[in-house]
Image (cartoon, rainbow, N blue to C red; front, side):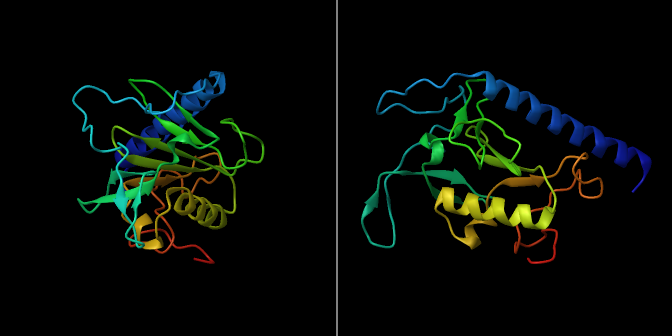
Length: 196
């Protein structure tokens, strides 16, 4: 890898870290307000696909429609139906133009804490996830974040591999893996760690 590629990569990671830090500060400054029943927890920007991210009844394995799911785009060009996590406790939302949802694993409210080992961000407009690993050991924390994401979305281990997602680690946590998309454990192209 030449110096220009390394510089570009470092700038990209720094930008992502800055966005994450700014987003976290924004979430911490927000006071949660009750949402009226039947209203969407996220905003749709003009020109975005109003179908993606909307509540849609689907037929599950039981043959009965599920009212608490919505459709998101997958990396293979299809879509995945996921449990509507957007109304869960601990999920913070912003308003346009950023419109990110975020949850923090060890909290009843949307704040980071000293115990947070990872954070997960979701963009309804782009239907993509960003998982940020905040502590070592990287492999163990990534497995925990993946397990929690699978449970929160109500999807299978195979489905998690088709999510449009980046699994990143900041430079201050691990210099070697920073700037790389670690992927989800067990998925094609993912970094392999002991225990995967």
